[in-house]
Amino acid sequence: MTIESILQNRASVRAFLDKPVPNETLKHIFSSAQLSPSNCNVQPWQTCVVSGATKDKLKLQFMETLMSGASPNPDFNWLPQYQGVHRERQFGSANALYSAIGVAREDKKARQMAMIRNWQFFDAPHAVFFTMDKYLDIMGAVDLGIYAQTLSLLMAEHGLSNCMQGALGQFPDPVRQILNLPDGRGILFGMSFGYADENEAVNSTKTDREPIDNAVAFFD
Image 1 (cartoon, rainbow, N blue to C red):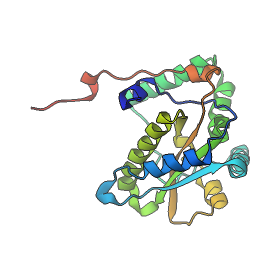
Image 2: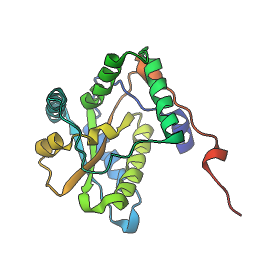
Image 3: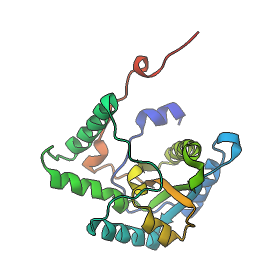
């Protein structure tokens, strides 16, 4: 399987089989991901993989946090709102998702329930939180993005699917408490992963990509 074929066939998966990934496979994938490049080789990622009872405890704590009406308090700057064409693409992505699961635009309750699924890890057997020292700011965030993509490609090579989730960085307090992370460590985002349930409609969601002429400029 080539990287090009992986990219052509991958999609964010939001329904998983109740089938944990073998520990030896997990360790192999995450060991290989350590080869990911980073600025000056600082390797800023501190990766937290949760499964089993720990994942279930986090899920419960997330639900209690949401039900309390708490506002997001991310460790990093998630405040900017998309504008212009970026806003249009955001709407297009949401429309593709809700169309796949038959949720109407005006059905705000159903859309809210679909959003809550993020903090239930879409019932995936595993999730990973991408954390780093807070002082690293944007430079660390760049490296974590590169690392997460490396990890995603390795997972696909081993038959695993995933969903990158900015939502998993919105409420860092339960994560910090349950995983006993130091105050100086920030949770940037997360990813739910496992074996995709191909029979679930939500996994038929397909999003568009811009043509190269709109995204890349070549200078000779």
